[in-house]
Amino acid sequence: MWESSNPALNNDDAFQQMYGGIDGEGRPITRPATATVSGVVNKTAILVLITAAAGAVAYMFLPTTYPVLLVSALASMILGIGAYFLLAGKPQLSPVVGPLYAIVEGAFLGTLTSLLDQILINQGVAVPGLALQAVLITVSMTLAMLGLYAARIIKPTKTFQAVVGTLVFGIFVTYMLSWVLLLFGRELPFVSLGSALQGGTAAWIGLGLNALFLVVAALTLILDFKLVEDRVAAGSPKYMEWYCGFALLVTIAWIYYESVKLAFRVQMLLRD
Image (cartoon, rainbow, N blue to C red; front, side):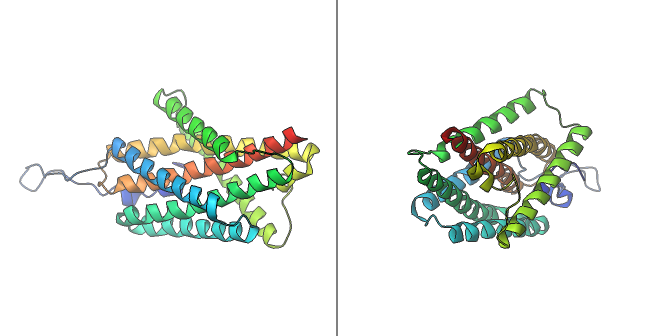
């Protein structure tokens, strides 16, 4: 169960549709085009660009109100869960479902960034620039994890997989509890961004937890890279490039989500 903390990459049935082999007379069977690492990189880049474009549109044109943020967040979560279960059964749909998820996820992240920028402006920060800061952190984290994985400095051992998987599960439960409390007008101490507005010890603890969540999100990429590499080596069908791209986008979007909140918390502390 700990092969990857990203559930979209743990679909053995989807990935292990093997082609080729030997026929009954001992002759090799022609293998159709299969997924490649470069293909996964290209599809992931396309999905990230779609997410960025949707985010930019949402940032510039959607109203910066809590209801809009809530609707986009719920839509992103529902589509993300629905996309996983749909693609688990029919990964062939990933070239269509992946871009749709990217659009909704981008709208949520763009709305969140715009709302946090507006809060900072209301708090006296003239030029917040959270989007640029979050993008830089996200790119840096992604490249760092890719470099560490390629150099085998961090290896996805069984222990590593178990530790990261456990942390991801704990963070997921924490956020689910936080969202449920928000529906009743309450906030989870330190995890909620309200702690950043309180200042003092609560703000510093919240910053520490945010940084921890960001590190876990980045480490999840190590497991994702390993799974993608293994699946590609197994000769998965070509459409799996989109499937892998979708899975990686989920993690990259999580890294941005934690990055923009981290930048917000830091600016609030600097303002104080």
